[in-house]
Image: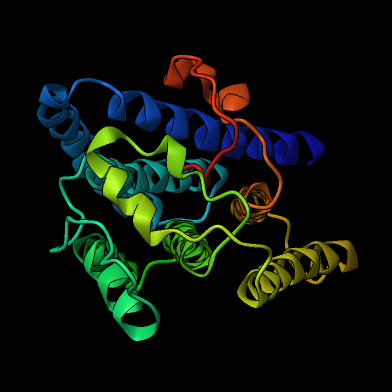
Amino acid sequence: MVNEVVWACVFTALCWWLGTGVILWLDRLPARSFRFSLGGWTVLLALSFWGVAQSMQEVSVFNAYLAFGSVIVMWGWHELAFLTGWITGPRKTPLDAGATGWPRFVQSVQVMLYHELALLANFAVLWWMQEGQHNHVAICTFALLWCMRLSAKLNLFFGVPQNGAQYLPAHLKYLASYFRTRDMTLWFVLSMGVAMGTWFWLVWLAQQGAVAITTGWVMLATLLGLAIVEHVIMIFPWPLERLWGWAMGQTAKPALTTPP
């Protein structure tokens, strides 16, 4: 059992690290390569839906790995489509000078509206596929990624000490105007409190024997832990090059953003 837990944790961390690195690397290639990157990943996207469909049919260790890996590929397609500028929003210009409050929120939504709608459409498809199926690892993984990503986006909107605007690719530099650099906000405290409370609750349930420690459960708990680390990085400067220098060309940067 210990070996199964360790391998599930390692697989989750590897998917997180490698998936993020590949997206960062592809996004830093010349713009003319984007159509080929997206075309290739779209093929992987189709395969990921097939993998999810297969994994949902039965609860097993193999299907847990298949479900989790397939959703990471699925999520990577959305991140790549956004970071290459293909699916962002109807607004592709910087924030209007002096915009605050509701106008700032509306403009912030407009710069990523299509991206958010695509994620919701993807979740709706997974929900439809899940009907009558036994394995829920895939849909739970996607839901966890979406919730923590939404939390990160709201933290960038409200403001964090390390918003990582300097890591944006040239074609998305206008997004930096929507970020705020400020001390820790109430939203950060609340979002981190909920995330950490959920993680500790999951660990407590496992220690009390209240839940079965399955491979899928370990993967979800590990992914939540990694998402919490990403949020902590918004407070304390930690150069992305230490984790993904091979994908970023070892470019020296003073701070970092939440990885995709």
